[in-house]
Image 1 (cartoon, helix red, strand yellow):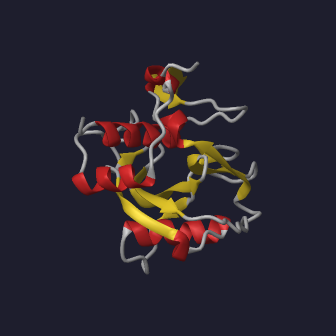
Image 2: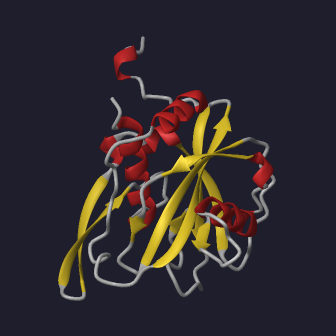
Length: 203
């Protein structure tokens, strides 16, 4: 018999809508080295897929030949373009271009705080619910694979690993969340930590 007190928390779409409607507290996550430079505006979509078994996070693995962040796990997204009227517009456009996600299946919930990277980007994470079925069409140049991970995994602080690495003569810290052979780290993991803090900062 399972003890309900130790069962994993399974967030619902209704709970997420309520959390974003109420707003969150201080939950920003900044990479070291992100402050002292001019940053390029960008946006990513944090797609939460409404599966019968529970909400999942849609992630992509970038192709190995890309100049920036080759092979890394990421959210669909990219630089803000002149025609984009908002961060949400950038995120929806990029998600459609990269994985073929239909904007009509997407319900934008809101924004997380700006995430500044040490590689020179100011990223606005746009959190959204996505209604299946997903008929994804991956951009073969940018995206090697798309996969889904349970949202409950990322909302458990026990899965938020903190690591240090020497980079250009100084030590930098970063988050990592390994899941079933996928190494989710850096900006993607940092934004997931920001999401967890946002959702639970109101308790």
